[in-house]
Length: 594
Figure 1 (spheres, rainbow, N blue to C red):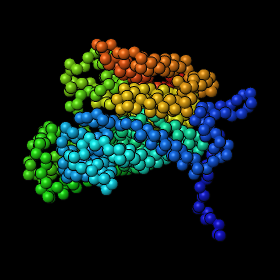
Figure 2: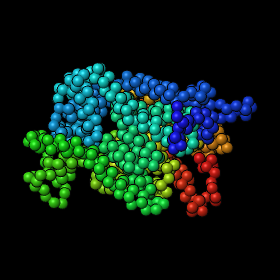
Figure 3: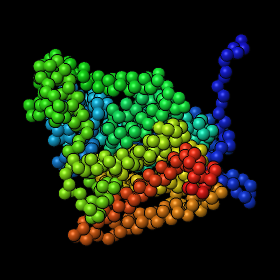
Figure 4: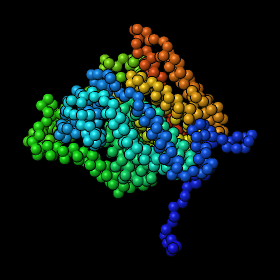
């Protein structure tokens, strides 16, 4: 066998148990031995001792997370046995029905009163693909008009399986790659990064919403993880492609857009102006959006060629097109394409729905529902402008920081801060949107020191509080038991309240929290436990039937506001801005600021 060429460098094998500072172990000073810092690490302890290969460890992780997802899927879903509109399950099924049976030009116009399509085109294409597969198995599941509200158990199995399949095709591979990029960047060994990956994939809020309530959010989150991984790998062009896919699947990915745009702009202007990169990012982004809408436009071309009329009950031109400052002739060759574009945008961004829906733990709902100040007397346009102004005020600091200091280690903080700002202040927020700021915040577990009590406690605080704020929604879906099991299990595995208080007893030298953080966390946890007891055993007054839900909203909004401030402060601290302004007195000890 000939020796390898001088230009060939064999891939260096990563040491599974190489020492790092990620905080997964503690030192027993009496026995002078390492011990697991929290229960999840204990489950991986045999793999550390035996130096188990990733080819064994990763499949084991994936089988475990699959089991918990499928067990959650057995429970009821949104709208189960709740006519007339049913719920999100019926919405997703209906989109498969209409995309597989109707012309493309009808997708964004068809019967808008019955779960009209209001997501971007990539969701429509995804629904079409799944609907085509479902029609091969049983055409009755998606029969046009005749399948509305269908609650067949075989259909439930199929729909649940499509969520898991979509997640394993997009979200989980992206999570594995992103965690490995973070591990490489922060010099974290494969064993510890596997623990972080498990914690991220076992995130209870995502499982409860997608596999309990019923959604396909993990497809969007997977594209976002792919975007993050590309930015960490210094591949900005690919990050543009994946982020357009993120936006193209669900419009709520706009929560991340300012931070992504600021970072990409930052690497184009610092340390020096890079015109080719800036032009490349611009061209790739525009081309990606063109590719996103291309199938919709090709379908419009085909339907126009066949003279397929639009539904008779639709308003032409769409409201957004009517608002244009110039008139457009119906005989213009581009008229049908502009109709489709403006109608899709009008459906994707429903400003007419109001400031918020239901009870969500953000600033607007907390102020309104608590009685501090009622907002229903204001014009919707004024409220939308107020929401825009407050959102801009909240996202400007992290975006400005990542623009002028475009460093990869700041990305999770920038994404989390921006997403928290959107969740707390923006227009048309749902309680389910909380999974957006949770994703980049939970990614901190895969960074240097991410498993130390100071970071782990804050990540756990955000995740557990988020699950709790979704409890009223989950109760309506009959998911009370999965809520307690999954949230309690994650808290136990991560060594967090109410299962363990070890993260709050660690000293500052061991990466513990300061007194203020401990008081905030423990008082919030005490409030959550007290709320659960009161909600279960004390009936709300007749004149205040939403008392417990309002209390949930107010405490949740306060806690999320603190999470936003923590992410922003950590970002400022990690950026070195305090030292640049000579406010830190030299390099600050991070342990003192947790």
